[in-house]
Length: 477
Image (tube, rainbow, N blue to C red):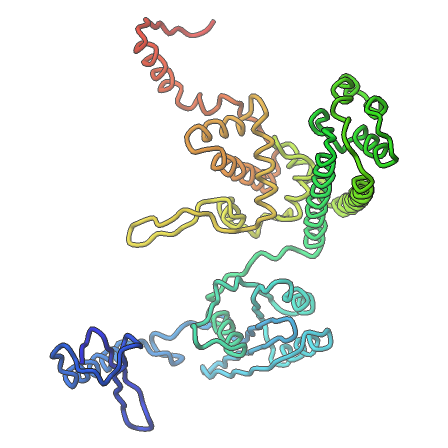
């Protein structure tokens, strides 16, 4: 049989060694004649010798012998959490090296989770690990918190071997990884920070919903040929809302609608008279009434959420005030930073670890000395969005180090890469400020030019000389 198209496998049946020839290509039959002159019997003997020698080289997996993996946690448990069930595996190692293993399944109701905690205490478990599966891990964590040393791990880091995956084997696998100290826990903020996260993320979703409703109102006005957004910069401002209410009430005179403008918008009354002359039907008025009520309801809900956020942010006002000193960071951004990071930076060994966790640094994908891709990992999308918004805001500030960094990078790498780099810098500054307690120190917009001042001077002199000019450089008085 051709050795290039088939492989030989060895297995045990009782006390006999069974050799079987398996085709590498499933669509080829074993009954076909081989196209080469490979001696299968010789090949089988060679594979048997290689298997024996390989088994001799393997380290012993028995406790107490050379090559055994070190046991870090003698009594630990692994949990495989699902919506309706939790599979648990407890591993207990004795002083003599014996290992006891027990598996059980529980429900996810509160009474079932309390039974799970009792079962873990019966075995004197000290450390418990579970995967981060949606929100299903959170009630389990709340029940077990304070009783055991809990660890939450990324499911991508504890994947089992394909083809040998069941719920019972999953919990056993992560328990064994925890037993030998091969797992790295994820950052789980305290309860008050988790509550702040829910509020700030809900505020973002409400703001997005409000913007969608405002866009629907503008589309409907465009259908009726009312060009309010072409004249007013904020069509949903005080003047815009009054005009829309008048349109809903049945007003069609463009002059009366334009006269509802207030403050600076009154300077554009002639343009408003032309823009508000449309063809509004009862169908448009009905939908405008529905959209406007929905928009105002969302405004009221956002206001209530912000009041609750401000009330819960009272213990962290020092961090909020400190972070607001960074250019581009307002109160909303600072509150989002507190909700996503907390105020205790001890969980991140360095600022670079924090940037990697947030997904604001290039990815590591290198093999055989070649860099495959530098695509950033997903990270915390809520934190990255907040920092990118702050980076876009700071690009308009004059005489600022961050805006100078943006312009310097945007000229060479593009605006999007420059924004991500500025967001990375803001995160590093926020980490350092909270770690050291010092406020922000502005370096100035010309800081980067002062670093290589002589080189920059020679460059511009050389450029001017190429234009046929004689250049004399003298320091300013």
